[in-house]
Length: 328
Image (cartoon, rainbow, N blue to C red; front, side):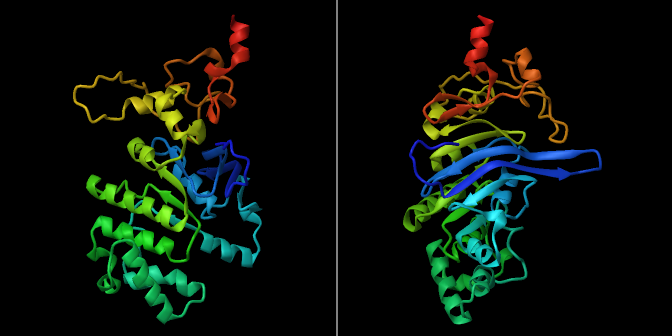
């Protein structure tokens, strides 16, 4: 993902790969050569079907996974080359909100201990940590009485608010939101999304937002990357992606988004077949086995990145101008 403004990105991801060895002969390429930037104060979203590598990307970006290759830079420094002091400071600046608030919260710890654990790890006294926890709970819409309760005593939306409070505890600047509302009811989703937007504006946060819900992505994003089997297929500003999708996969995804008008007629693009296995991906363009516009070159050659508009990029042979000239 590119940004037209010539300023230093807060986060830079360069040629990031994360492979998992599933046997002696098989390797799962969860993330395969991703490059993009995230600028301070914006929300960059990653969207795609389940299993395409979205969560793995987010986890590798904050060092929950070690990369197979590639680099991630935070504020100009390679995070995989930090010394101990730099790593400790990085843990304060970067946090994550996980998808399932029930499994990500320790069931044996009270809310006070869950939210305050990071504060104590970074040297805050118990008294000051308790006061900060009370303040954080109020920020996310909970109150002091909730401090002594355990996660199972809360609803899904309340548990996610606790997860948000925990992420905010050490005053981070960058937060990876890994499908933070996918496990919640629709009405609760709206509340949590509004809370995240308010916190972003109030605290000057930068988000990397992971989701498979295109309506949610449209609501929160500044720029969007569409991912398929570990690779980008299209990236750009939100309005350009949604109003003028260029890649056949993006077009198919957006055709499936429901519109709040029962009389509206839309042409649904149905993709044939299922997603290929990530440990045995197709040659050439990974999408060619399901693409309705597949050409012979798609089966053998991986597409390069083509700029179809200012800041709008697509990875597809359909937009190779030189190839078109040769065909003519």
